[in-house]
Length: 373
Image (tube, rainbow, N blue to C red):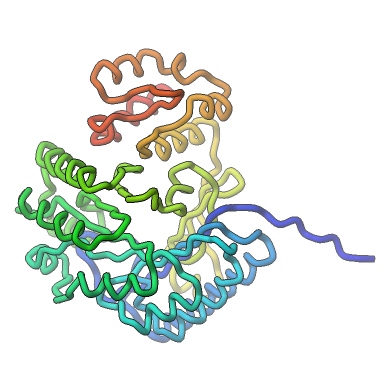
């Protein structure tokens, strides 16, 4: 008698977390640790164990994303071990992304990434300004234009991360950062306002945050300049040319399920959002300490609004009605009228979305909606 074949689960996206960094960025509160060879070796072994379990339970993924931490800091041996195992999990036309520190990128690394069909790279430049780089513990001298030229030989789909809102940063300095980014001639930019999270070095040092008025001026500048140069904002912090959206991140923002492995990685599957807790010792001992949140109807709606309203296009009113068996415009009638009067939202071709003015204060809009779920 043949054993019953287990039915595989179809999920679009897989996230893999690498917690190691060369040093600690003062604004960062992500789970990370300074690189240690023995710990790194053991961690990759445990990740590979998790990958082997996934092969039997899930269909191949449309997007894979290796994030951190700093994945590019892995030894070439460990990185190849990881990539060779992940290669069995990707579909033929998958988007396969890795985050890299500019210091780590050389031709040897790029050849390795190309070998395993990584076709998208995200580079954490953060700023081109030497004063700001020194302030965030990235005091290195890199010719970014030659670096990007080298990357393009192997990977065409390139994202760069930039941050704004540092102490004493001027509009002129942000404008110069944007000018340098545009000169790179790449197709994607993720740009974030500096947030000082509890537990970060900046938080402990009481680092001053940019005031709301200045933050709006900075955001208006970057929005206008990027649009003038052919970039489309498709999510509040993400801009693309030629429709080169991050397919992986769109999966998050469309509130679709995704799988995640590695300490501190968060996933969403079977009506549960989960997080693998950041205990490296437990993880290396084979224990997956997981915190789960089962979604009731209120949480489902909160997550739907929280993710979809980050998108430039907002969400389909028909999709909302199908998911929640309710008419959004009736349920939120008074709030919608108030937000519309203040030019914070618009309704067009069956989509509810925030305006430019509204996306800047998205948290305010979400708070109003959440109070009435």
